[in-house]
Amino acid sequence: MRKLSVFNFITLNGFYKGINEDISWHNHGGEEAKFSEEGAQSESILLFGRKTYEMMYSFWPTPQAYESFPVVAEGMNKSQKIVVSKTLDKAEWNNTTVLKGNLAEEIKILKQQPGNNITILGSGSIVTQLAEAGLIDKYLFMIDPVAIGEGTSAFRGIDHNLKLKLADSRVFKSGVILLTYEPQ
Image (tube, rainbow, N blue to C red; front, side, top):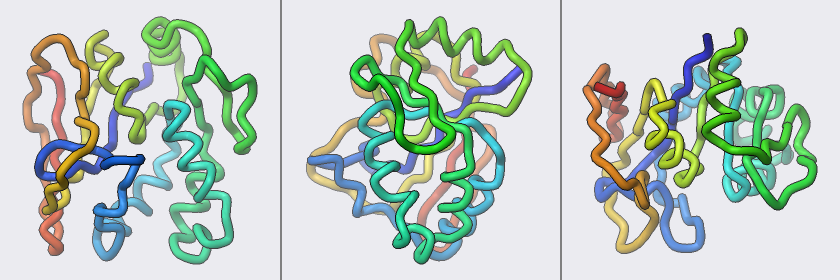
């Protein structure tokens, strides 16, 4: 049975993106880059919402991505990917399928099948929907030591308390902290 996890970087005030999808505040260097390289080699199936998919697709297949982050670019482009969208008919990025049905039901079916685990990147509304359905097994939050004025909360629109327990933590030299939570 597959496990479903979330990986998001967030600000100290809980935003995973700023105004106009801005993520320029995130620390992409040093130990954080090594951590990303490890994650890119995990063979997880990557799950995105349409906006996150479009942002990722606009960068990871480019020469700039391969030049700046060669290991991560290779992993992102080789990975199996799923984009959740009611508006996309097909996905242009290699190894990507479009999921159009009932999100919770489709993910419940995917989790019951054998195969690689699934990791949600970004995609706040998907995180909220799947958290409310009780389908997420692990939450990894990389907290950057920065606060921004406005943005989108990592759990925007959640309609009930989500009780989590700390499973692991890691402090990077830059001041970034990785917190891993599991449902209680």
